Length: 395
Image (tube, rainbow, N blue to C red; front, side, top):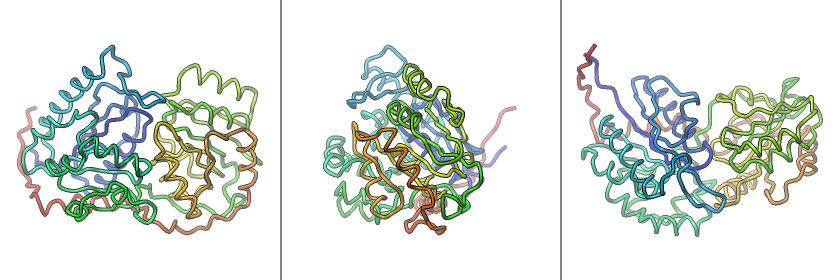
């Protein structure tokens, strides 16, 4: 006989990159740190989820994977199925997993109905006292597009039918996605801002030269599906001292990997790797970072106070550019538009950042989301009592 622990299900649709599943795993880690009895189930379409670090009391259910083209069109990543067939299959898996796991709280990432409505059946099958939360990153897209997508998905109607709260993983002083979506007043009262989901990190030295000897210059391109142009430019750039680390990402096409490796051939000062499951311990002491602008990577750079040049994705959505521009206005990073990326521009930035003072204090925005999320979960206990029910375990 075992006591019934608090169960939290974390859903993300995952079509491009690793951002959604990495955010789910960050939430799982924060919830476990806040209460070591919490059990989390991550529902994801990212093949790589099983290889990423996850906390105790956390498991992963994979659904058949989606992919998204550069033009924004969706399809099956591996199976020879139509999109409609794939959505039906994913929906059936999600419904079975959620009804079997019987979570106390469900946290849905980004899409209130799931991708193409795949979560609707599962949400309708949950017991009435299950608390359902919509989790939103700070920026969804530029406001006009975000509002149009929200209206097309009938987002507010979905909130009214199934949801109890909205959690925003950001600081409204940077960007307020609730204002951008123009949520009605009845819902603004149920919005909770967690702050950015940044890892806890010791403060590095203030300037480039004071960082540890041998620290690397790193280039990160997220999952890598559209990362070749930046990776290739970095492979041909130079930096003032130390070695370079270039992480291609597990979703980069083999032909693109080959081209990047050819560009880096013969360089003794550059290590090119496909994938590092637990990358941040290695990145923490970096001299400088050149990255794409995914939410999780930006949070990590803010936490470690690494001088960072963000080269954001601008197609098919402007989310990364909007976030990077706003953080650049606050003096927290630099931005270079991807259409003008060249080896010479990266070289100029990498040499120019040498000696630049970044300050040793924390950024003047809220980056305590990992610590805040467990408190948000506990606040939901005011609406549902998480009773320590007893569960039979067969041996």
